[in-house]
Length: 578
Ligand code: ARG
Image (cartoon, rainbow, N blue to C red; front, side, top):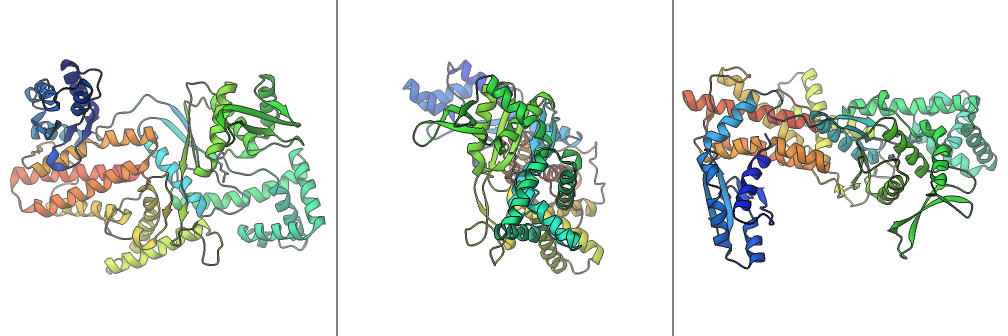
């Protein structure tokens, strides 16, 4: 349920009835358990503006909240210090609402009015194999995709792969060269090396470079023979991507592919439309959009170049054509770009241009969901020891390998088959969670030991917490499924706190979807898992009798299902046993 919204209705009304309708009530989940379940922080601010006594204002508000008590929603409302208001929800209210969630397959989370939401991710460049730099877009994009779908939206990946541009001339030339000696298949097996060698040849041989340039021209003019070579390269590279997507468990496959090349025919018409509308102008032979709303460091309007002097198109042109497609053809209501923060200026300029041009009206939300860099322990972007980029597939394989050592240590009785299954789930989820649990806008340091630990805010911790709940239910002799005859009782404060947390699930998901911040959900799940563990340690559930035992098993079920649903929304694997 949307607990916050539910309570806000009461609290806003109480502010209004107290003559404070122009002040924000500032209702928040309590920062500490001793402050109850929710706290209202707005009385002080209102008192300050009104130059009156904050305590008196708080008392007025509390009086006007008496209906919460009358309706049995709260046990008590207290005023603390200089006017903080603390709300303690009642056991009966919490139990009843939790009981409803337990029997709802969506755990009380409603579907929202459906929006069409293309999400631009993973969008790697196909000239090289996917490397660690592509990890964040993949993981964050996928979590958002899952959350938005769960909320009822038509969300899907648009994989804007970099499969076009001058580098492909160089790659095709090298492909032809290796083909001549019957080695192209071998060379293509390692795309990283292929790219390096091609680049070396490009730099050392003028003849090679010239051929490469002529291939670019032929490619762009649609020469079938050159296109066939390009297709062969792109196909190999795409296969690598699909392998990585599968390993990562992404909701992305070939059907989401909509690479840069697919907009080739729209580029000139897009530029023409902008020129016609007077938005792009000629500047030294190039076509440029000057943006008054974004100033450069000298205070001049920035120049967004959309066509080069030689007629060539740029990254910007493709993105303009792409937005047109997403709005006009896909009918997007909201477009999300999960792309490195270093491209912020590009997206600012792009969105400003698009608004001016009317390619997207105010009705379409355009969002650059920026993320920071994954760093090595040395505080520099994560690389191999000899300074090379790390292939994503290698990183994922290493994660599984490291996890398998851990899993074996923890449970030596497992069969090889079980170890493989569990370590794949643990390894991949650990990498994902290490990323998703941090605020996406900051850089973070990649650390194997930290992410693979069973303690702390990690995927293995959450996975283990879930299996413990399953084994508790198994040991109870009752079914894993909820029992309609067993009421939930919340006699202890610890129980009420846990139930309140469980009822905040929908609020958290809605905020994640709104702000595109998966770490809110990660923090929530960690808090939920640790609160339940503490609860379980303090109250040995299986030793209790009858009603209390049954009630606590119901709470365990709801906790398990909420954990599972939440982990699923982050793209983490959930295991019954580990
Ligand atoms: N391929 C680009 C890169 O690797 C990211 C593309 C992001 N999406 C977009 N529509 N510009 O940097």
